[in-house]
Amino acid sequence: MSDNKNHEIEKLIQKAEQPQRIAPKWHEYYRGKIESSLKCSVTSMDDFSIWYTPGVAEPCRMINKDPSLAYKLTNKWNNVAIISDGSRVLGLGDIGPLASMPVMEGKSLLFKYLGGISAFPIVFDTKDAEKIIETAKIISPAFGGINLEDIENPKCFYILDRLREEIDIPVWHDDQQGTASIELAGIINALKIVGKDIENTKFSIIGAGAANVALCRILFKAGAKEKNVVVTDSKGILHKGREDLEKNKKQNPYKWDLACRTNGDEKKLDTEEAIKGTDVMVAAAKPVPGTIKKEWISAMNKDAIVFAVANPVPEIWPWEAKEAGARIVGTGRSDFENQINNSLGFPGIFRGTLDVNAKTITDEMTIAAAYSVAKTAEGKGLREDYIVPTMDEWEVFINEAVAVGLKAIEQGIARIKLSESELRRNAEELIGNSRKQTELQIREGLIKKPPL
Image (cartoon, rainbow, N blue to C red; front, side, top):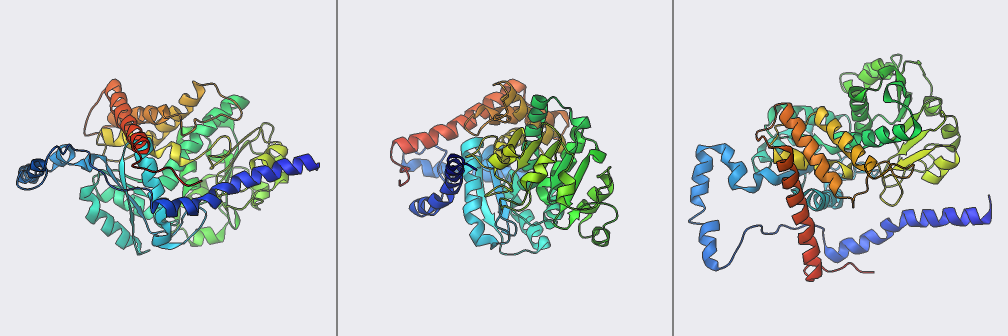
């Protein structure tokens, strides 16, 4: 390899490592990323007699008689709880609730800035699924939705399923549904560029954690054939002959189900075999470059599509995947092209869900969001280095909100029925106001600019 090429790669690696070098200084400077703020007018101290006692008693009485009025008289409709036990944080693993707080605050920031939603990090000092479920139910009256975050597999599936059954507000696991929706959006547009259709595309799904299990479910509903999908975990390819999977099927029925439904070619070895001869590879495995090797990518079909989405670093550097022959490459990072990251999904998906007071978030709503994301990028002109919008193209979140809200109404799970124009106006106003508020605070010095 030439000295110029080595220098170019070294610069790319330094760029990739820069956010982690800067992050500690910025976090210490601000001492956190979020805080509560007022949304009502206070023109004099006399206003407190309306906002608090004695005036506040009347809204309390009204809600006591009709609980649905909480959606009109409080901010419940726009509050989201971000719940985590810190057992599966990004690529860091089980670091516990306290160490997970910077991630949960970051999630709150994205909810607010990109979706106009008040989201609160609530970390639980327990890994007991039943305690997490019970506590989430206890605090649910204060919220219009719950976002489960960074909870280990397979516990996360069980908690999600139970809460969706037992409380009357939408519960969403972003590591599952959010990641799957944006991956599907990227796949939709990447396949358009290479001229392939989803029904005949062969997929290798590397890693059988929450994100990829959900991706498989969404792919099947979007038209991919089960026999054309092969899934791996840390022990190799999932297949019906894996005695360990069958033995553990009560504890992890989701993985056993995939072993029984996928892998029509009956591959039985390792990740290398799984990737060979496939059109699309999605890896959500180990955040270590080299987890996916260049020669494995070279054995994929022509015009290969590679998504290496582990955070904070991908399983293979994007330039290595390109050198190995991949035509389209995406990662989970914002500092590389084609960011395949759930940050593009959950703010808009929750915006649409909350605006119609939906009772849940269905797979169909998730798929509607994916097609909306894909269409937003397509409208600007697809390229090999542009298959999904970037986070600064804020119209993507508005488009998602509209698509999700309309789908919820169509499915009969919305408490409020709004027209397409009403949904768009709501989303534009709420998201726009959130961005303007932040910009105003920075301009007025209420939020100081970060240190250099």
